[in-house]
Image (cartoon, rainbow, N blue to C red; front, top):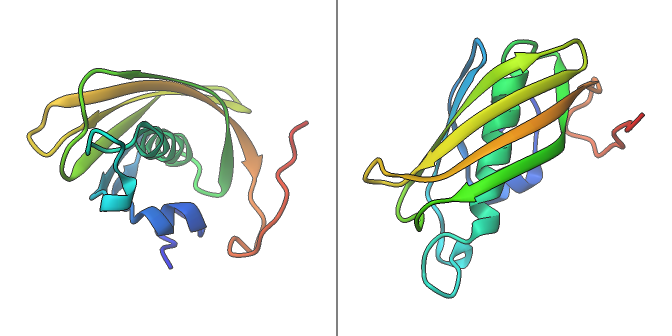
Length: 140
């Protein structure tokens, strides 16, 4: 069980994401996809790529206030080339207000080539005191 993200996220734990860096509006995550994470072309499935970018950008947003959680409001992902091997995603908080975070990030393959880029908007939400328990997130 990984809580280095500030909360236990079962799906992130299942995929095996590793938090490398998480501070001052910046984040970096690493991920080695398993065979079951591939698509029919034997490259990392786009859903796994988007999940890695979503978590990376959310982590960048949370890095300036770790007591808060975030929920994704919108995300746009551009796929540039297939993602192969161990993947590294780097995120950056571009701007924040009291309740919103605006982020961007890029995913790189094992050779250091950019494979996907995303922008996302997150809403800051108060985090429960028991992060390992399942709970509802307010949407208002």
